[in-house]
Picture 1: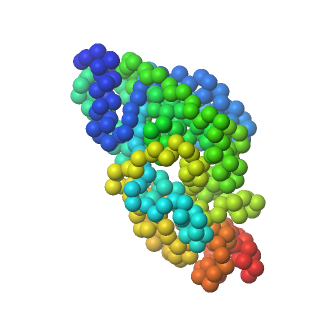
Picture 2: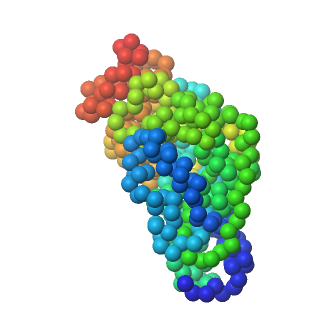
Picture 3: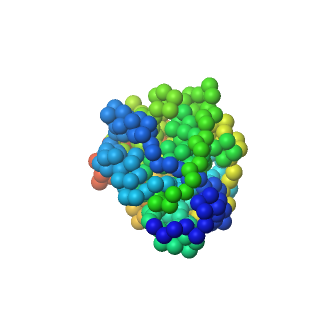
Amino acid sequence: MAAPAEDTEALARHIKAWARELGFQAAGIADPDLGADEARLLAWLDAGRHGEMHYMQRHGLKRSRAGLLHPGTVRVISVRMDYLPRDAAPAEAVLADPCLAYVSRYALGRDYHKLVRRRLQKLADRIEKAVGPFSYRVFTDSAPVLEKPLARAAGLGWIGKHTNLLHRDAGSWFFLGEIYTDLPLPADEPVSDHCGTCRACMDACPTGAIVAPYELDARLCISYLTIELRGSIPEPLRPLVGNRIFGCDDCQLVCPWNRYADRSGEADFSPRHGLDASSLAALFRWSEDEFLRCTQGSAIRRIGYERWLRNIAVALGNAPGEPAVLEALEARRAHSSPLVREHVGWALARHGV
């Protein structure tokens, strides 16, 4: 590693200022020692709470030991980018209308991975210009990284009872990204927990996935069921999914700290194709070509067309038995996918058809 062109304290201040100039709302520096978090992760995996997310185990201890993922790492630069779009239909209003499709607010616009990663690379380039060549690697939900514990260690917030990162002034509507580096920067102090006795997120979770404060069973989480799970959504959980077809934001919507969250100014996070408040029946009529076209560059694309139809079938089963709902389901009754047929059959049976 080349010697820094200035002392590390000044360099750290510059890095945080450069991050803000690049569109990140905050940046901090973490000591990557996550021993306690590693123990919690291993216990979570041993309990099987990761469900079918086998990749959580596949990488061994790389997720909690930065040096195994990027040798030589001594610090992690953690950044925050707010994503709540300014122009989206009110989330509560969409959830209250069972004929509308609810898409998690983070997925309404363009996929954040490339955007955040590009900005992180620009930040790394800026650092390299200042200090010369150094060892680093950038991540944004793209590798086995314990993003939230690292962000907590970097002073960007605390991990709430719903297991999301929280900031007193920004709530939880933000993405995280990291630069693993060998630069011996001064680490920031972690933020203390400010959840107190509040349990709003636990009480609001539709499926009871927050099984205890700071403990999430992914197998019950609607985000897991609609995004990560590849097979059938368990029947007892289907009525609880409501009209949520991609992800779930309920624990964030009720969190008191989100009263202070700012809306994002990033145009890429604005809703596309009306997905902030679309009719379930209309989305269910999309052909596969329409699905691929309308989810181009979107995080939704990752679930594929089959699971898209599976999720909407469940939501239609939870919707009122209006003609448009029944017609949409009938049109898919003989779908070529057994997975889709199963969920359509369940939905029609819910309507007595």
